[in-house]
Amino acid sequence: MASEEDDPIIQEIDVHLAKSLAEKLYLFQYPVRPASMKYDEVTHLAARIKPKQQKVELEMAIDTVSPNYCRSKGEQIALNVDGTSTDDSGSTYATKLMDKQIFSSIQSAGNTSRYAAAVYRKGELHVTPLHGILQMRPSFSYLDKADAKHREREAANEAGDSSQDEAEDDVKQITVRFSRPETEQARQRRIQSYEFLQKKQAEEAWYHLHYCGVKDSRSEHERQYLFSQLAGMLETAELTKSPSEYLSMLMPPVEEEESKVPLAPSNVLSMSQLRTLPLADQVKTLIKNVKVVQFANLMGLLGSGVDSTAVLRCIQQVAMLVQGCWVVKSDVLYPKGTCSPHSGVTAEVLCRGRDFAMWKFTQGLWVVRKEISAVVKLPPEDVKDFLEQMAVPRINKGWEFLLPHDAKFMKKHPDVVQRQHMLWLGIQAKLEKVYNLSKEDMMPKKPESQTAVPAVMSGELRVATAKEKAQDNHAALENDYRRRRSPHRGSTRAPGEGALAVRIKEEPVSDEEPMGTGSQVGREVANGVHSDESSLDSTDSRALARCQGTRSEIVAAELKEFVRGTLRKHYVLSLSELKRLFNLHLASLPPGHILFSGIPDRMLQETVLSTGCKQILVPMLPDLLRVSSIFCYYF
Image (cartoon, rainbow, N blue to C red; front, side):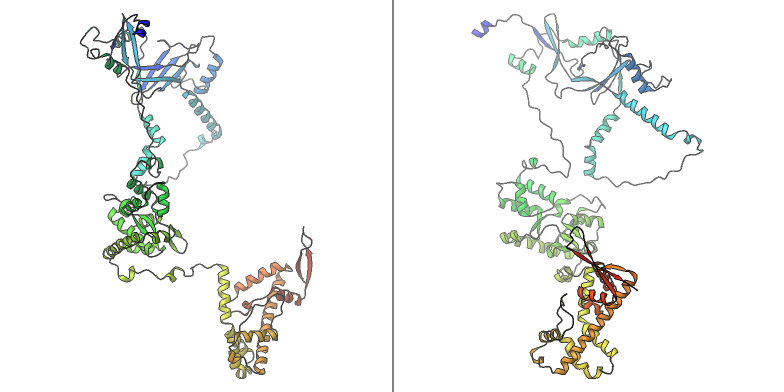
């Protein structure tokens, strides 16, 4: 009571709510007015509007005789925009002077329900709600026209007049492409793109308006709608309410505007939105996006505090266990009623083919795409699509399962593994019936077939394989060579030599040790033969020594022939370059050649010196302590 006495009521004003212009009244906010521009009926030259976008453009005149107007700048802008053309029909500035400015509107406030325009007359306040608030800002579209004119002039200067002399246009090749049918996901992404929205806004037609000044009779008539038509009538429904209800209508309580979450692309998963879903929906959304996941990684994505037992119950409804990992079910990816985006195959056929590929991965980590395509009879694009969901391609091997075998999960949850095994047995029986497969076709392949030697072999592997074959066939080749060179001795020593050649174990010869000594042969015989054959007589030992010496002579002769042929082509060679050429020579020899037994560097170097070459020791910079060998051949 004391506060009311201190603040007495001075005057009571009746407030009326006018609704005649409630859906048509806009408030325009102009920028700070320059001295050369007047916002009145004279300055407004034209106006147009796009109703759906609530976008307005106003063309307003500029006072060119004002002392604040720069005439030279206005002439330069008009010249840049319109050029030197005398045709005024297509010109932006007909007076060759920038005498007008275009203002374009933008939305000032998203929610205008709390704003109103009020008119006070004869002790009454008439309030009309606003439908929109638009801010008028200068538009600089004329600069775009000036840039376009400048580019046209540059193109004309570069082209010159040469194009006018041509009698006919050049023939241009046209490439015709047929677009693939657009999927629903691609259509949604295209509709939500910025370019599509800009194109839709540009397609809306402009409606030209007639501007009426403040003192115009039409304006006077429209201004009368700002006053309530029911003023003075006591039975007005809005004014017969209680003071609190009237105040609520006049000033509604402030409601927080709901923030509109932008729609993310279909292949993007928001973890913040995922947390708001039930656990079953979270698991389904995650497994549908990742396709293949280990259980430990799935628990990490769901966050802490989630019961693993509940997750196990949910994951078994939308995924199958393959190699200890969880792979999304086919009917989750291809619901009933859908079809393939590549070939139009129905979802039922796609699910059968994908189930077969999943079942193949339960039998092993590798599958072959051609084998799956031969069974499921689906287009290659569809087979590749669901293989890429759960595997990665490997050259010359096939498709490998995407994740490693999760033995830890299978050991921890044997009951789940057993249940999934029973489900796979049912799927296997169904696949056998649908694809008419035999028991042999459904049996897993032997692991040896997966570790076979690849069809493409490297050069090092070829050399190693050739050396192994040469060592295996060394004894037979050596006996054949001795029979051809010494036929008169073949009948007397063939049995003993053959036995010795088979049982001798050859040791690698180092660079420091000479080849083919008697003590080395003795050790080889002791290491290679059985205990009951160690008591060979001296005749057999001498025969073995002669055999070894003959082999060394053959190797030396072949090596010397190679060195002479190489030095006839290259007069100066380093030891490393000679070794490189020798390796190339070995690669060109047939399998089982005698040079495949192994040639040490010292033997190669001695053979080079024995052919008449000279060795030059050349110090290598910057380290003078290191010395390189260069061989020079003299005829």
